[in-house]
Amino acid sequence: MDSAEENEMLKLLFQYQHGFIISKIMFTACELGIFDLLLESRDTLSSAAIAARLGTSHMGMKRLLEACVGLKLLKMERKSNEGFYGNTDLGNLCLAKSSPKSQYYYMKFYSEFTYPNFQYLADAVREGKPQVQPAYVTPAKDIFASMYSSDEGVQRFSNAMDSAWSLYGQEMMSAFDLSCFPVVCDLGGDFFKDPVPEADLYILARIFHDWDDNTCMQLLTKVHKACKPGGGLLLLEVALNEDRSGPLEAHIRSIMMLLFTTGRERTLSEYNALLSAGGFKEIQFKKRSFYSAVLGRK
Image 1 (tube, rainbow, N blue to C red):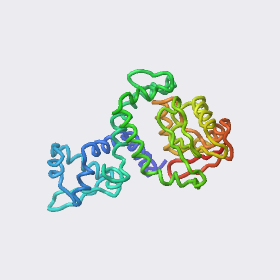
Image 2: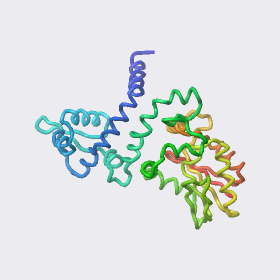
Image 3: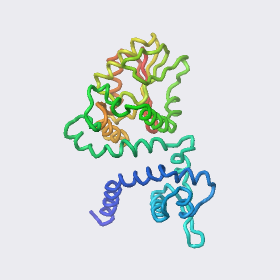
Image 4: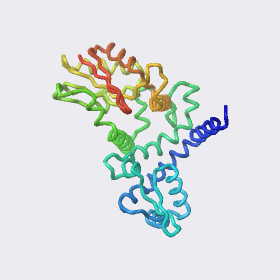
């Protein structure tokens, strides 16, 4: 190994070793409202002005702003030997709360719930079961009742999921021609207990990865029974490659499922097997930039 290869390897190590700090820097900047302030100001601002407007110390704010510049979340220009800060395109598009594609609530959920609970990942690996704090929760269907036991918690989770969907929802809903399904039902809530409404197409978006195969089959059986002849089921999930080599986002989410749920990410052939076992036919797949779509018919 030459010195250039070793340097690249060490850069990668640094990036991974400090990844949790990098994400917390971004979460903190979102929480304090830096991106919102800079979007609204329509001009660059000094660190002193930003600190005064947001009610923080000047020293702490300056260091946070400089770190965000290093992460390419903010840009900086020098005026009279002083730094003035503004949003990058990423900051305007995804990190300011007022943007139509804002990931603010997703960041907030990750910062407040996901981030602190990842200290229990080693326990999840050792024991092979979710580590929902402060205690394990059984049966599987009650896991989320513990995580989101209040109306505020449910709303927080819903806001986070809506934020993520603002980036990918349009491309996923255009993956197939769905014009032959006049009535579409996006299943949510307590679909294990509540009756399934009448519809021509049922959508299960980011649902199956929360559950083990047996629980998924229970839900599939229920949906298949409610589905009209010729009706359809559309699954939207992050799919693993068939050789399970990636993509990285699927592995990250599968680790999250290990920590918080009884579910996992699956390959498209595994989704095919589930839908086939559930009675669905003519199964089609479409991979998009992040999620994959699986369409089956009764």
